[in-house]
Amino acid sequence: MAEHTRSSITIEAAPVEVMEVISDFAHYPEWTGEVKEAEVLATDEQGRAGQVRLVLDAGAIKDDHTLAYTWNSDTEVSWTLVKSQMLRTLDGSYTLVAHDGGKTTEVTYQLTVDVKIPMLGMIKRKAEKVIIDRALAGLKKRVEQRAADN
Image (cartoon, rainbow, N blue to C red; front, side, top):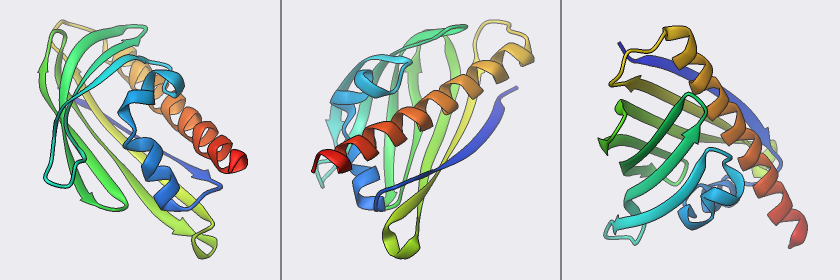
């Protein structure tokens, strides 16, 4: 059965700046922690990533998989698993909400993971939490550093 985890963080930047980092897959290995390689395989009619191949190393979960991305708006992107060696499900989303007149952004990351091999639920949940926490912390650091550099 798939497990579901959600967490949020506030970033000192406008939603557009946060989404620029989220959509920049080529640089994921620099800030996500778990993503070791990222390659855009297809784009949508607006030039945004439609399918992305990712090589993931999250401790208990190591995989080479492809995700299909849906850009729901300028403040929400979701993804679903297309193919994987180890995973049965890897569905998630980033939702951005502007605060303080657009100066800060609350980012909510939701993730559902299920693996093909038997794994204790406790280990899967821990891996999910590690993926989410590191991704949010890395996203915050990356966005705020880019804003400070400009």
